[in-house]
Image (cartoon, rainbow, N blue to C red):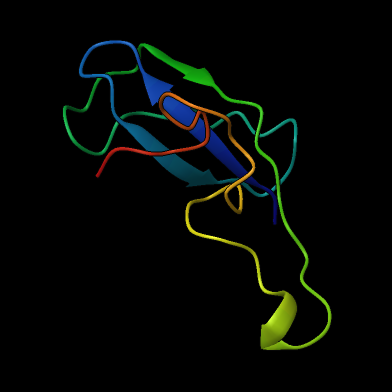
Length: 76
């Protein structure tokens, strides 16, 4: 089952939406404000291999962002 990440254009929050297939007719809606004015985001994933000694740094992108706000940071 694919998991898509969306951003609500009404309230600005991000959320995940589970669908049965890529062509699912079920439209996503914001669980916070119930708006259907949402846009799908380009999601990334990370796989970690090895020991805790080579674990990524803080933040969703493992501390790879340089200055400013991390573009991968999601609001609660």
